[in-house]
Picture 1 (cartoon, rainbow over the protein chains, first blue to last red):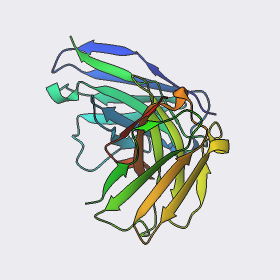
Picture 2: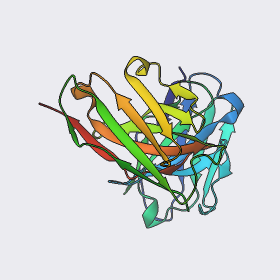
Picture 3: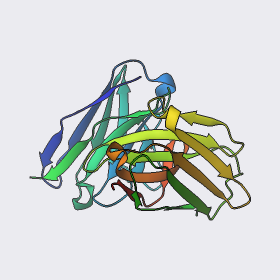
Picture 4: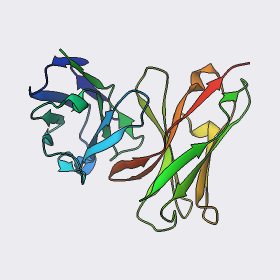
Length: 108
Length: 117
């Protein structure tokens, strides 16, 4: 099973700042099948990024994903008020599919 | 556009069977290219993949739950379902149905299922 470790657990930032979220996989993620989701309280997760770096249609370009070996990063270039939420990484290349524990981006 | 609507009982007695259904609207479950499945979230916790099923009935289950779960597709009703047997309090969670291809791109609203006597 691929374990995904997200850091930090909580990121306290102000609107307009840059957010950098990390997701480290315990082993190689097949075909870069790594996705990022945003979840707000009481809502279902929303897919932002798939294939480590491909943005879903309709997702603002301030969201970007990158990959370096088993390290994956979600970057939000300039935080908007609606971006404060919990973010999860997810690998869908190997069974069982797994999720990271999440990073909460909160308003400082 | 495609929407998913999950349904099922909000309360299940310990040792009994949990049954949930997800209805797909705005598109056909048989259109191909997608998996249909379930992901749960324990209260205040992260996400756990339960399993996926293709429109043709091929299933992929989380090994940690495999002995207790069954998924099925009803193409005539444009629905898919989850059955989880021998539930315990540890199965209390919000259960999301989802469509997946490159990640889970469409989600239902989530159904809170509480296991309690």
